[in-house]
Length: 397
Image (cartoon, rainbow, N blue to C red; front, side, top):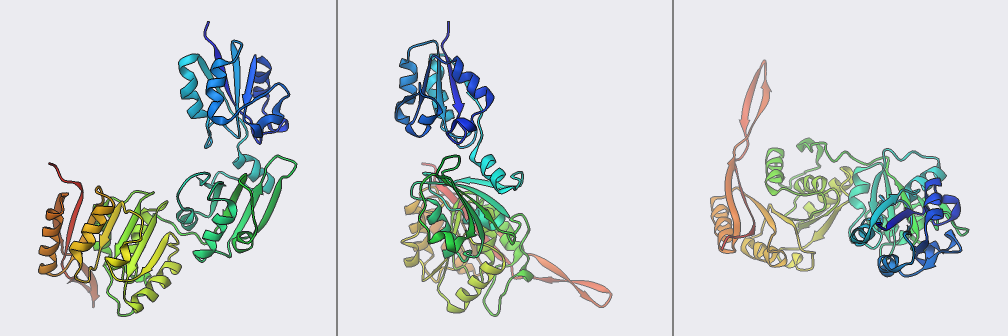
């Protein structure tokens, strides 16, 4: 007869937050195992480190063994990993539990059917993209990215005035629920067992196309919308990508990229003081807080940046080959798109992409025209033709 393993979602880690199904599974088990944090579930629970749970369950006496995990088994849970480890040794059944999202939102009296959910507990990443493009964001925090650190990130990005709900040690006697601004919470220490619900009523729609008329421009050059949309599609930006925008100018392309890298970060590199001021203004106006502005000249300003998944070069300052070489050295699989107006820049870039071993090098010319009213007629006015060059990954050997 096969052994039976229950993996049980223990809710907030207290007897009161167990489901009826979970209680019945515990009653049917010959042995119950859990980490120290879930020790209060029952007096017969065997406590062991998480890394030993699967092995101890396999070695436990009895036909039916229960393993407790916090929260719900399908919500950023260790249950999937445990299931893989236990499956070769018997039947494994998952018992759902109360998640921290459900518990906390009920405490606050708010719905969670429109919440963007992210976990930074023991993970790398940034919350700025999610907050930029969603009105409500629920965040699991912990480790290096605890609640205080996350709130400090919001403050540094210019979002210190947002309302943030903090839930610490949920379900325990030491439970703390507090509502304040990100700036206030950034000044308060907080433990690892904490969640945040961030309210951003001014969040923008990442799917909305950015039109030229939406940007502050002055006399700084700007990549036109037809070129931006084509170049972004060619770059194939993914939601969690790290992106460099070299020669960012007004930030028009930067903010297009930021909306596509909605869970990633865009590093906008620009050397001109007037352009930097406009870039910051457009970033705030159009809500792209997952943009970090880097003042400096490429490639030197790129040295300290994290390895990119994608690079857009709208202006190289005569350093095209060195920029591409640096990007490739940081990530051999980087995807690159370059726009060029001059034939000399076209040839320099094409040769550099080929010489550096970029795969799938392509060149397109985009010549767009826009209609404008002339009396009762519509006249088409041509924009400057632009070359779009792209390449990515390792060349075939």
